[in-house]
Image (tube, rainbow, N blue to C red; front, side):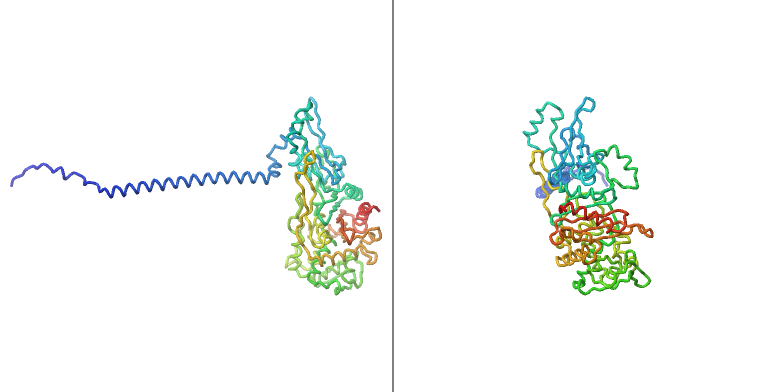
Length: 514
C-alpha cells in the first residue's frame, strides 16, 4: 500500500457566506433592543422627574397649609429672626380694647428689644395667654400672624428711613378677639378668690365672649413666676380650667338625659311620673337625692327642676336604652375632640353594656367616672339654646395689618344639628323651670331679676365618701331669645345654689344692667 501526503483543500476551512436575510434580521433585533433600552431609560428618567416635581409640589403645599405649625415647631427659630425685624402685633378685645401690646426699647447693653405688656394683668391670663416661654392662649395660637408684618411696601420703606433703630421695626399684624371686656370683667370679679372657671358664649354664632380661669397669674411676669408655677403641683395655676379642666358634671348631665329621653319617648314630658321618697333602689343597688331630700310625686319637669337623683336613676335604668344613649353621647361630643381650635381636653364617659347597675345609676346623675370640661358643658347648653344646632366656638375674629387691612376673618359656621329642634325646645322648657320660683327650682334665685334664664344646676361629688362637691350652673338668657350662654363651675364649695348660682346672678345682673 502506498502512503502519500496531500495538500488540504483551502475551501474546507472557509466559513460559509453569511445569509443576507439573517444579517438583516439580527440588525433589526439589535436596533429594537436599543430602542427598548432607550424607552426604558426615558421612562425611568421621567419617573424621577415626576417624582421630584410631585415631591416639590407636595412640600410647597404642605409648607403653605401647615405654615403655622411649622413656624411654631420647637426646632424652628424663625420667630427669633422675625423679632429682629418686626414688632409683635397687638391683641384686641371685640371693642378694640388693647389686651396685649408691645413696647420697643433700645439701650447700649441690649440693643433693640421688645417687651410684651398686658394692660389688664391677670384678668385675661388664660384666654390671651403669654408670649414668652413657648406661649399659651391666643398669644401662642396666633404667634405666626402676630410676628409677621403685612403692611404695604411703601409703609416698610417709610419705617426703613426712620432714624431710631427701634422705629425701624415693621409693625406686626394685629389680632381682634371675640372677647367682651364688660362680660370678662364681670366674670372675673364675680369669681373673686374662688377656684373655678366661667365661660360665656354667643349661641347663635359660637363667639366666646368671656373666659376666666382661677387661680390665675400675671402674664407680664411669667418669666419671674415660671419656676414657682411649675413646682406648684397643687393649684394648677397654668391650666385653663375652661378648656382643660375635667370635672364630674353632677346634675348638669341631666340635660343630656332629657335629650335622650325625649328622643326615645317624645311624650315623656306629659306622661312621666315618679314618687320620690329620698332614694331609689333597684335590686341591691341604691342611690339617694342630695341630702336625702324627699321630693314626693313629680313629673319630668318637676324632677328636673328639683334635680331629683332618684327620679333620674329611675329614668336611666327603666326608660332610656343604653344603645340609644351611647348614640346620643357620641352626638353630644363625649369621648372625642371638641370642635375648638385651641388646646382642649376630651370629656369622657363609660356606658358599657356590662356596667354594673350601681355605676349605671351614677352615670345618669353625672357622677362616677364621667368628666367634662366647662367648655363642653357650655357647648351642650348652646345646642339647646340654638334650637339643636351647635355653632363652632371661636376666640379670634379677625387678623389685620397694622394699617387695618383685614387678612383673615372668621365667619360663624355650624358644627351640625345635634338634636331635633322640637327636642331642644322641650329641654329648654325644662331648663326654664330650674330658674323658676313657681317650680321651686334649684336656681330660683335667678327668677324676678329683670331678665329670664333657663339653666341647670349641679353639685358634683369629686371625692367619694368625703362629700366634697363642685358647684355648677349652666344656662342661657334671655330664656326665650338666647343672647348668651354661661357656664360656671366652682371647685370644692358644695351646693350649687350657694355658689355657682350667685356667681351667675352677679354676672347676668352686670350684663343686663341690673
